[in-house]
Length: 444
Ligand SMILES: Cc1cc2nc3c(=O)[nH]c(=O)nc-3n(C[C@H](O)[C@H](O)[C@H](O)COP(=O)(O)OP(=O)(O)OC[C@H]3O[C@@H](n4cnc5c(N)ncnc54)[C@H](O)[C@@H]3O)c2cc1C
Image (cartoon, rainbow, N blue to C red; front, side, top):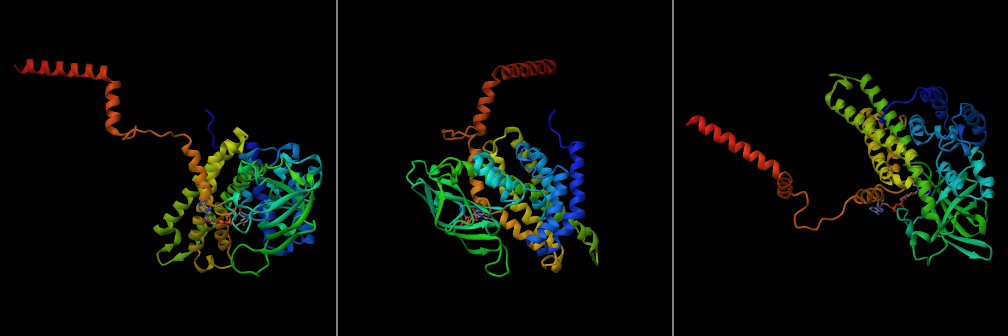
């Protein structure tokens, strides 16, 4: 009997270590704000914690041992990420922050030795950062509409185009750029290639940085609006085969979506904890908030939504470990991608609401959570697109029946059942006839 919802005691010890470390070291640090993020702040605050994580054997756990990770697999990673998900700084401290994780993953899969030397090992050691430059300002949901071109000129590619929301481009040493190389290829999914472009290549420019959420200065933020103007890179700046961008991106985005979902479980749990804490503490004329039935309904609904989402995420992680192929788990990944923003938005909104004015203030984390929930419904593709993927995968198991009434029309099922059990029904009829005969004989 293989179904099991318990964590083995050895791994539980690691989770307990993470729990204590998060509470005592990571969470306090995240309240220091910008002081932590500059080069000196990173050296002083982040590097020592990263070292503790390395010493504990918990660094870059999304990677296999051949790449310096622990090779825990996705299920254990899911349980870990639930803890990291409640704090934005945690992935950096544990060496598993997006977009570097996904970028490292595809360089590991498809990179040449030279590319690994140049980018992979420094990325894994947390020495450099990277950005994924795929979406374009004309629309990111459908990659077939992208226009950025890379044209071969001698032994060099010349890249021209604009990209939108290249997260962390301002900090990145290398940009993973999507560009059309073969516009005439018959298969539209073989027209685009991926390039590794050093950020300091002439012609690469951040037009503007964009921030997520309301407020703040225009031009601030970490989302790079990029221009590539006559950017020249050598032929071997190609990552993987020419024309293979879509295949490569599936590896990157498949893992990324699951990891976001795992961390979102942690964020939802955090929001629910705060909601319950407030409900237990705030007094009204009729008792604590927790004594009011409408509040109880919100708590119950949130708990059910969170637990259902969590189980779906962990089962998806388990399936990835089992099949070792994201493509075979596409349906499940699409499902959690769709569910993630909905559950997160619902719980974060309820938690904010229950805190009243304090809840919607900038002195509480809820507005950030609500914005993040909206981001989860857009980044890595909008909900609608994932619903379509999910529905198509579900529909693979169905073939049309062409009769006027469907196969499951009850009169038809009844007729089929009568045919199947004709002998038994005939026996039954005989039995009842005999009983009736006996009763009539008795009466007479
Ligand atoms: C915080 C954040 C970080 C990001 N980081 C990166 C990054 O590092 N690199 C990168 O390349 N991109 C990144 N993105 C971009 C992201 O991938 C795109 O925003 C996403 O693919 C949607 O594209 P779009 O914003 O252009 O929206 P559009 O494509 O304009 O879509 C807008 C809306 O239209 C509707 N819609 C679109 N298509 C369909 C459809 N087929 N069916 C039904 N409805 C549809 C949906 O409601 C959708 O939300 C990031 C986005 C965010 C918010």
